[in-house]
Image (tube, rainbow, N blue to C red; front, side):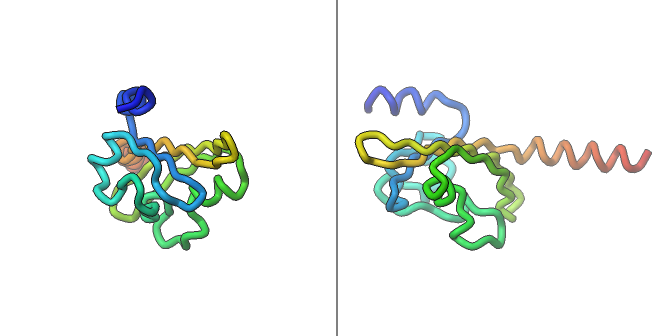
Amino acid sequence: MNCHRSVLDLVPGFIVEVDENLVITMANSETCGKWVSIVEGKTLFYELFLQKKCAPEDCIIENTFEFKKPLSREIDTGSGEVFNIKTNYVNENDSAKVLAHIIDITDQKRAQEEAKGHHEKL
C-alpha cells in the first residue's frame, strides 16, 4: 500500500480517481466498500456520477475532463441517495486524471425536507 492510498483511506467520504479513458485508477477503501462496481482498472460506473435520467455526456467526470477545471454537483441518484460530488482536474507529466470526492448527504437532505415540511405546516 502506498502513502497516498493510506492517506486517502483516512479521508471521510468516497474518493475516486479516473483517467482520460474513464478507467478507475484509484479508489479509497470506503468507496470500494460502498460500490462493488468501482474496481481499479475497470471502466467508470456512470450511475454514481449522473443525476437520475441524465445522459452519459452529463457525467461530472467527463465534464471535468472537458472543461479542465474543478466542478461541484449535487447528485440525486433516484434510489433515495443524494451525494455532493466535487471534482478536480489534474494533469501531471502529460497524464490527465480527475479526482472525485463524494460525500453522502442523504440524511442532511432528508432533514432539510422534514424541516421544510414542518415549517410549511405552521
